[in-house]
Image (cartoon, rainbow, N blue to C red; front, top):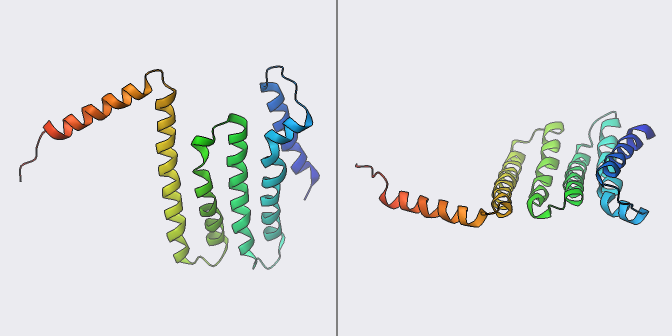
Length: 167
């Protein structure tokens, strides 16, 4: 593994962060506080992937489960640290084992029974992302809750008095 493949993205990420910080100064503690997922978690996930892909016999596909989980969790944590949106991104933690298991399925023996937990976890994660993202969007609007209340009232009225189907 080349040191340039690790240091290059980290330096780019640091440069973008410093460019977007609008003149605030940060010490080493604040930088580590913001970038701990990129410093500790994501490289460990990459290490598991590197170990698997450098094996000549490719029998260690089990390494991809923790690798996929750690990379996904690292990305979720990094996005949440930079944008402060933990309340929206937490379903990524449900998606993480699904990604690890999917990598195991894809590069392993293709056991079809693995698709059951993969699909359940993925659907749950997507549903939670949708619900909490929409909820966050409604809460950030000036009239978010009243708009949601009005939509719910109108939906209920439509259900009660709407066109009835005759059988």
